[in-house]
Length: 163
Image (cartoon, rainbow, N blue to C red):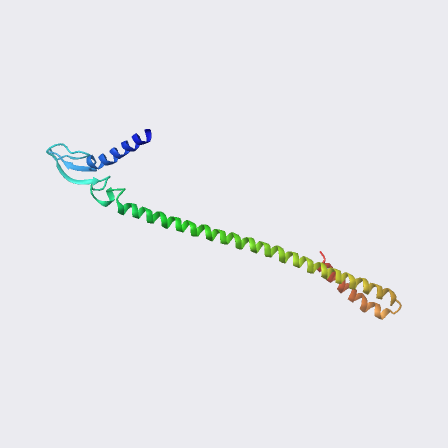
């Protein structure tokens, strides 16, 4: 009941507004004074309408519910919805791509870690083997110097890769 009354009141106001609203007028009275207002006094000479709030009655712009205006609003809404749908799809694709890139980075980091562990194991095995041979061949001093520099190189490689 209240909704119907409210809708009827709004319809009456919307229909009555164009009938009495003619905008702000500028006129000159009998004494030559320039005045502004909604309604000029009788006998005043209207020179111009300054501001017109409501379109002329009967024009397509004045009828909110005209088929042309409704179609225009429907097309505008459809265009807006299509744009928003494309933006949501684009955002979803970007999120999926970011997620896949993060997975690949983690996978590559794990792979690099496993490779470094394997390298460390090989270097440590070579160092152990070399130290064992060095201890056995300790009697010959000339071999010891070349083997010592080789051992230092292996330890340096181990230090670089096994942090």
